[in-house]
Length: 399
Image 1 (tube, rainbow, N blue to C red):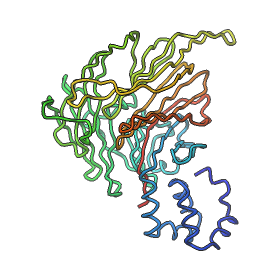
Image 2 (cartoon, rainbow, N blue to C red):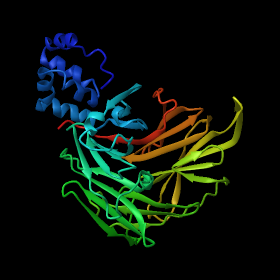
Image 3 (cartoon, helix red, strand yellow):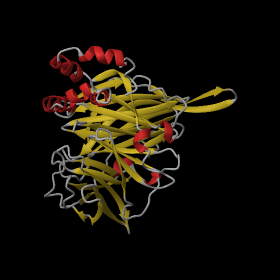
């Protein structure tokens, strides 16, 4: 990690003179990417971090830690993931991955960050049209063979239409799932890293009287978003018996205007819809602000509020869940978001850009206690750069 500015050889030698139990306690106060970096400092640190007791204690803490990963568009030789965790709310971590990606030939082009789960991260190339899986802890990289739909450019991957599912055993095995319309019918595509093969399954219309998706451990992949109806594919993490859900959306709360999904430009959009894991976040904006700078006219909108909706128990409708409390007023020219659910906690990130400056807010909602938490994130030093992927992940573990 680039944040280890003080990990000089002299400091490392001094630390090695302390009792091993004390060193372990110091290491356990760090987040996992810092620990992985320390493992490379010297053999003594590597031996301590590889100790079975330390690994067990570290993984117990790490599995409850949630990360937000951001990737900005830059040359491959400088490829860096920016990471922020709810355990350390005052800084971003920089995770260089250029060395990891060297075995894969991308002809120097920049990559796009698709998804993350546990230790596995997926990146896509637009020119070569390939997807690679990077394991940050085992320090390995693996090319994924083309899907049954053939090579795909980065614009073909819709965030809410795909899901990366890793096995909890820590084996590093994973499934990459995505849903698409093929001949006017939803199809589920699944890549299994254990067999290195793809499988496709035509989904069937659900019998909503027998299906209770919420709380059932289902994976939801959004295929179509409309103003009044959505099309989702619901499956288990093991990809058994995928079905189609068509929840209706009755927005009787008096808001009309334009609608966008996933990414909005402030000059034309009233409502941004962000989907994920059977939930929908509606980001509402008002009024364009027009500013003039250097002879250029810029149009921005102002964020006014956020609502959370979820699938009904039978999967037939979108039901209102909650509104983010307080007044949120934030000017922006462009905005995007991501939304994930785990163990009853909804995690959402709103990323806005105004005059080249990126602003990020982490929102979480406890579905049991109906409580919101908002956390403005510190500056990620991304002014002037383009966003090339964002994802939540949790459960990073040592092998």
